[in-house]
Length: 193
Image 1 (cartoon, rainbow, N blue to C red):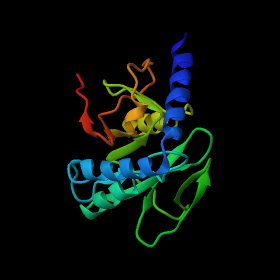
Image 2: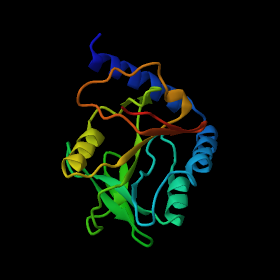
Image 3: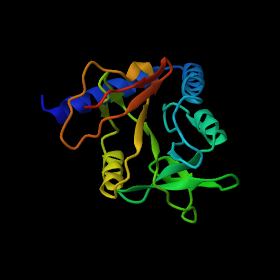
């Protein structure tokens, strides 16, 4: 099986497991994530943190985002511009969020675009070395590469439930590894060479 086919199979398997979690369990797990990481994610006042509004059965990290904002973070959300590009628009108090395509929600076109210092990254599956499987469209990989090409090196924190961990993700050259992952069991850093 090719790496691409194996990723597709793992993605389907882990998203099915995530979808099977009762709504109450997802809520409790999401609140546990805020408790685990709300006070320990290293950030300075003014650091830009990209989060996301949950879609389908994703973890709801809005409580975590509030904790980070209360510690001085500037928040932004990803917005899909086209089939290949996401940008990150500032999420400020009093600014309405709108539908931004493919079931996502974010600030409208009048909101400033920001370059995140910390990215809270949704995913389908991850392994114990920090490799991740996204949703298959490559939006985050391209956005991270675009930021890095400008000399901006955001810290990448994967957001998932424990059931999304797999033994091994087949890493390909274009894949971007995570610096840490946050689940309902805790906050785990990955060592990089």
